[in-house]
Image 1 (cartoon, rainbow, N blue to C red):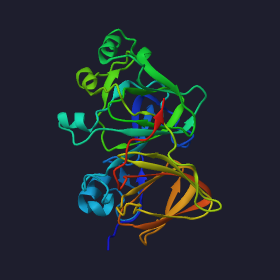
Image 2: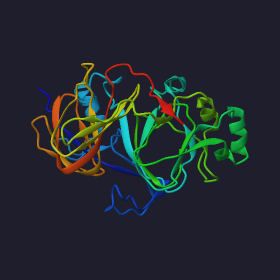
Image 3: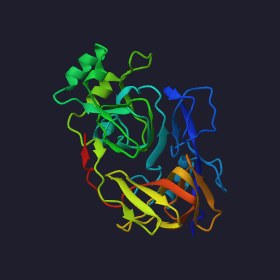
Image 4: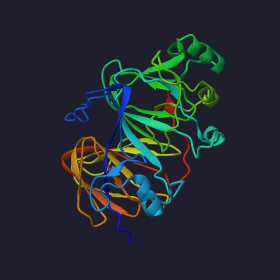
Length: 333
């Protein structure tokens, strides 16, 4: 029997020039000397904060436990498949692109970076840019980069709290200020910076322009199924179901039983991220884990059945690797 248990992950706060000192409403009690742009929750170097494995990283545990931790649905038994993090854009991010799997393999990377963004909070007027305006080609984008007006060629969208955005590899994109985003992505940090508004950071034009795709499935996700009532006081909504990840939203007032084994019969590690409220995660016969706003709990695949018990009300995301081959989601711009 596996000795794995639900892991409370310690967030790793990453300074970025476009970040902020104030991470409210997610981490209102944290004070930082530098501007923080991202809080990594399940990166390779993120550490466990509870139980016998306190202080060990996800990378170390994946090498040791392989499929007991990541599950049968993951592509690589020795690497955690999904990176989840909070983004806190206070200024515009650089205009960037990530490679898809095919482009990543050409440059020696194991896989690309397709991601999705759940808008946890958004001030009025918050925007993202996703893809290029109709009719714009890569040569025109390169010319605009050198002419310092690349943002004029981007497709800008207003975003609102509760939106889910799908960003497949090869999509030119950026975030504007005013929102708090929960990002779920392939476990990769390969980013090609195309344009940075004159900030003195390196650009990656050769690699980045080669990775740009003009026809992409990116956009706001059209919810695949209506909200599902789990019980009289618990609700579940599918936010996105895609080739690399499935993300659901739960709003619960009563204990919710969950499993690491999906309808396909394959198991996957589960990542729970609290958006509002507080609760307790129990499974594997270990000590209960408190899950509160801003926290992430990784439930290893071998902990087949587990429960989430709210303290009053809890709103959380659950992300996992699909056990079956899924198409890209239906989206709209």
